[in-house]
Image (cartoon, rainbow, N blue to C red):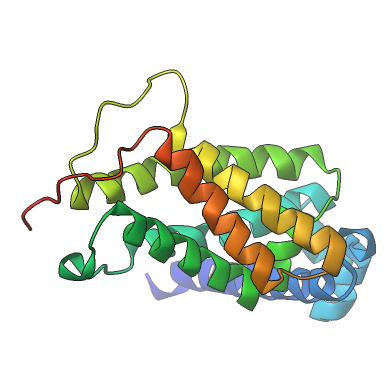
Length: 207
């Protein structure tokens, strides 16, 4: 049993070192500076090892996008002080502040989600993850408040997130970072879109 686990553990370690190298290169030069050979050099492993796990740069970026969204899912899974919530706007702000903290701490997240890289595979992966995040966010809101019936043909929470991200992306294009003023505006956009579907006062659940 021990020997059967070792290859898996070493593969996981190799994948982690590849993704760490790609993350560092993304932070330095964005997607334009990323290549399998550059990642191999940074990770100090043969290019063939990178190709073994990630046959192309888009495959590498999709894996990193998955990691970024795992951090966003962790934001939604983190404890929330139910008693401290005065209304759903408090929860809205808390969630967006946590997600902004992910962007602030992770240059790769900013490059992948907010920068204009034109990589269709990454954009598609991001949208698919956004749909899942939206469902998780709706479940979080529903855990703390009695939600009204929401449209079945659109993903209200996913759209709210994407709209907020557009403002953060604008800040990245203009300033190379998320400026505090535009971070605030992004949160307002997120909240304003939810306000189209959530009334000002939602009864809190008894937890």
